[in-house]
Length: 489
Image: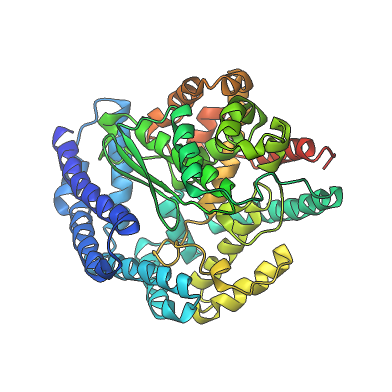
């Protein structure tokens, strides 16, 4: 076991270097350096990949003698990952990393210039490489399942369809009911200097018990969180002068990711169990902190005084006005700015399109048209600016097919976790008083401290004593937004 752990720690150091280079690429790297950076990332990533599928690691996994439940989990998870990725040729993995890194940088240019053709040829390569990857990884009926399993172990497209179809119908129904009630005034519809937005965000992180010795906040085109190594997690946000909610909730969202990464036991670091249970579970924590906690009335009651101090132009609004303002439901173009209700439709749209791409039911060149048609169907809005359409997210261009569904799964997990948490701690009082260490303590005990010892469905049952079920999210949305809009939905 000791030799096995030492071997994994070596791989982790290369992965750490790669993560730091990626973070720099998204934040401070000069734009002209992109192509060479893609080669460097590909080289380091490929070396780590080769180590992770080597015969030496295979022999260590098979000969290791676990001495505890933790050791057993290391071997179990390690063997699953080893046997899965052992089937992928190193040159295919290396090409995937290289092409994806270049494509993601071209996406930034394409988005800025509102021109899909700039990135289209490389996206075609990325899609083909993902199809090839799916064949190597293996699947029973649907190639998409092989890609989805990389992000959400145990989940399939068939199960997603079973969960997402009624959710789509529920969301469309609730949206129509809310629109019948009428508009809620939005106090945030004003321009606010990014410097003041940043001041408030940095105070907010301190209020949430952010540890600046282990984490830092920067700016990027698309907010993200990148764990670099032990006690080193980088988060980013963005500042939009006429949309101050954007940076506030992007910052809280990424803070949630960081809390998970920083609360996994140090002794798990670099090992197969040294990360979140899944991308969906990771997202459950960013969405829990951003939405369940960050958009709650108790949270805004607790920070109202400081908020008015930094933004005195908001003083005419009560805390209830502000709370309703951060929970306004409206049809919108941008996923990351969407409210909790319509967010569901943003994810289902992306899932349906990427599932079609991987199953040869949609070609890359037809993505803009297909996106616009589906968006019009679900949102009733016409897209005239492609940067608000299929060029708004980096995920496909960075090679992450199978990722998008985890965002919606995260919302579902978060609601179920919240339901269990309320039964054990006085959530509202703790949040009003800013006692977030106690909220985090509950989450650490139930979730963070487990790392990746359990797969998502097993972990959600351990945390909540119930099988995974979207009914908790439906109940959460119905109760909360009936109150926000003072109407029975």
